[in-house]
Image 1: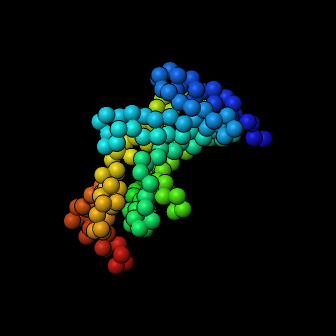
Image 2: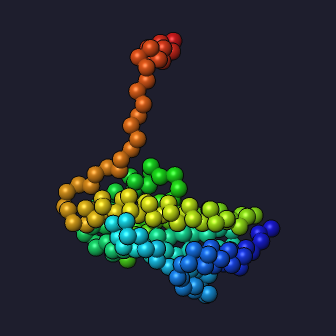
Image 3: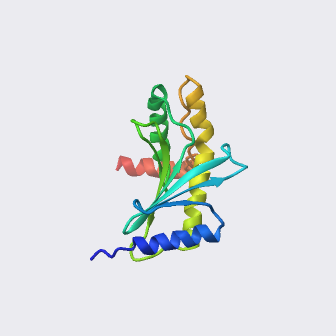
Amino acid sequence: MKINHSQKLVQRVREHLDKNHMKYMFDEDADCFHFPIYAAFSSFFFTMFSLHMEDDCILLDAEFPLIIDPPHRAPVKAFISDLNSTMKNGCFHLNSMSGRLLFHIYIDCVERIPTDAVLSRALTYACAMMDLHCKDLLRLLTDASEPKKPAQAPTPKAHPAAEDEYAALLRQ
């Protein structure tokens, strides 16, 4: 049986935002909080956030502050597709019709209410991903050249003796 946690989640998020002195708007019809996070250290001065309350989760959206024009949507989609394949927590999504670029995070609330630490981590991670990748995204919007592939961690080299043992196993 599914328990409706949305009102408890609304109260929990409201407490978290109030505790951190954040100014927000709450859309009662959509059970959704909207608020900016200001970050002077960021490439953008602020990022707009939405927290959508569902029965068993919170969906966090951080919005890229520019609308992607139609000619730039295909290269941005290709870039974020490669980028999303390397991410563990969250993903970028480009709405092909509106040109809005969002970073999504799913916060599981099945049989639990998120703590301040969980909410803070999700918001911090979304800010970090927007800031980390915004320069490449801006480059795509201003440059006709091919986008760079997202940076990946280097693959560790196997020890030569281990490679020989692996080759021997394949020959058997």
